[in-house]
Length: 402
Image (cartoon, rainbow, N blue to C red; front, side, top):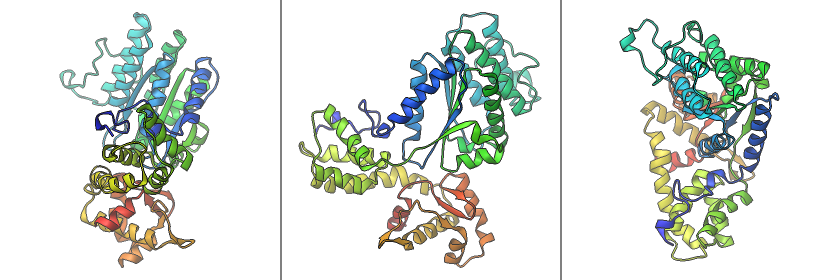
């Protein structure tokens, strides 16, 4: 097969595997856009799932749908060490520019509010030392500059929403890795979404994050479940995975044999990132169409080597020796759990007490590596006293390579 025309290479083709099976979410979001633009009440959205299921690709597709509806949009990725003022201001600056509102005092006022919100990130700094968000108008005094994130974000999004309403459009703020927001920022977003829903302003927040993101939001505001429409993004079904492989191949006048499709699902578990990684290697090594199960077998080591470096290894390298010991214990315990005679998938949670017992350590002595791994996004806690890998098949990787 021609590697230059590889439809599974990152960014190639019109139908990436990561978006296979996501038609329902895309269709629902288009309805949300229409309802908000017409002034109807609607909740903001949160996408959750493990790494490798295509959350970021879907988030970008949702933003694209908003752009096609002529909304103003902005996006940023949350980071544990970063506050929200700068990235939120930058995202909203982009959104205001996309709105296409006629230049005038109203636009200048909102841009001034965005600038005031951003510059509050450096209270007391001299004028020459303040971060400049690229907004030429003067910062507005007395709006979104109180220093209280909750008050300021409500005022900021209210002003941006009012500007959007003036031109009959909406604004969407898209936040990736939302679980990494700082606690005060999470609380502020919840408060702002509540205020926006009460005032029916055309602004929506769309977040994506790991499976424990709903718990993060709930811990901040008890009413958060009423503010967001939660959507769990999971692995693909057998039928969806086959379509994710077949449709890109058809664009290049190629096909997969039924046996090859079965082998691909067995190797990838239906996770979109793995489907893409395997699809790329199989395509490059397959001599002709239809692609066969033997082609999948031959390409398997190349695909696994690529995943070991780019997907698993890059994350494993971030862990300290003590954290790696903790991860390996999780992997060993997952391998010991058996249902119906087969190994339970590594994403199954394990008890923290069992990890301590497995390592012959006191539970409290393992709190530092566990907390560090949680912050690094390598594990998550879906329920009290239990943890799981955020990366599918990570346990298998650890057992085979460490």
